[in-house]
Amino acid sequence: MTDEHAYLITKFVDDVLADEEPDNNCFIMCYTLSLYLSIYDIQHTIKSGNVNTPTKNIPHYVIALNNEEIIDPTAKQIDENNPKVLIGEMPPNYEDFKVRNNDEAYDDFEYQLLNDGAKKPLQDMYLRNLNPKDIEVENKRVDIVPYLRIFIRSACILKEIVSQNDQLYCPVRIGKYFLSTDKIVIKNENKGKELGNASLLYKFECLLVNAKSKLSQNQHSP
Image (cartoon, rainbow, N blue to C red; front, side, top):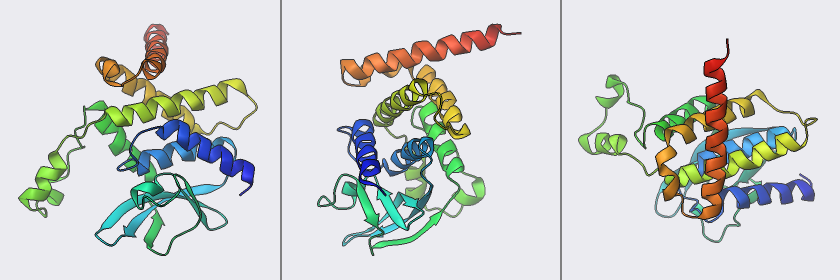
């Protein structure tokens, strides 16, 4: 990876994650970073596995490059001494990292954002194998506002890149992500005041106006 690419990747992560805690944001940060890399035709995959720490195993997502290096945009949740964005060889305590069904993982994530933090209902067969404590964890709603902030920042950055250069490669996944963002901001219109600052609220309102405009056009098209 070139120094320029490393700089652009680090800047993207800085701009999207901003001052959010890295904990529990590894998937959405890897997913949005994957879209960013795709625009610039940087070959990669998203992998998930477990990271062994002195106290516990942490389920985790990373970007795997074709040269066997990884990009970990939330490396600080593993170790505070890590750089904010880890780019390099897979650390030895990152174990069993494989390519998973990331579209399915994104669908589950989108479901939470469209249903005020509720997780997608699990199949009865799976629930029967869980103890009551685990079922309680599975049924617990999550606070989606931090996720919304990440969505807003990443969507605005990606939309700006695509709009400024129509010669750039635009994968189908990015179009689907923009459609997903439209649904999410419309569904969470009432959460704008929870976003925390005027700049982010302005970006949210711009996305919301654009999403409603497209929805209205689609409803009135023949």
